[in-house]
Image (cartoon, rainbow, N blue to C red; front, side, top):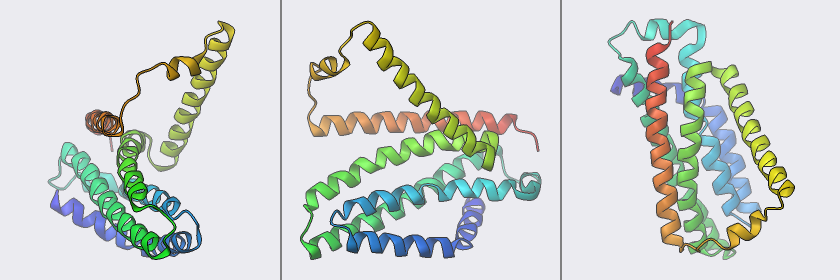
Length: 217
């Protein structure tokens, strides 16, 4: 797995121009925006897409056929991709959070506690994003994978709209139902969200392993 990680970091190095432009945009947003925490979300989510590009690079020009002629297992390949994604996202999250908090402190425009809470809330969101996108990327490849992801989110959106219409048809007040649910304190809510995110990540890894073991090159 170490060799695959080295390969992916070298491929990431080839994208240094894109990273440079993202950093410029990030600095600009953090310095010029009145709400510096918005730049934190931007930077974290953009960097969550870079590990997906490594899958596209591996598939380019039938590269997987050569890659798996080496002493690399498909299970190890999947684990490495998720480890690479977690490493990249951890580094980008820590960098962005630290820098945003420093800029907010110097500008005196944001509450540092609120920024830190938002940063913690971004972690499970990024984990869920990785969990959803990686199986699609491995199954359908680069372009088709992105189309499949868009279609999936579109389907979820349509299901939500359908549920709202059905509730209106049967005169069910969804808002009052949510309002009557017991209120969770912030720490309990964070624990539940983190548990859901890590469970989804575990399921995603298992699904990705099944996809890779069935894939032909």
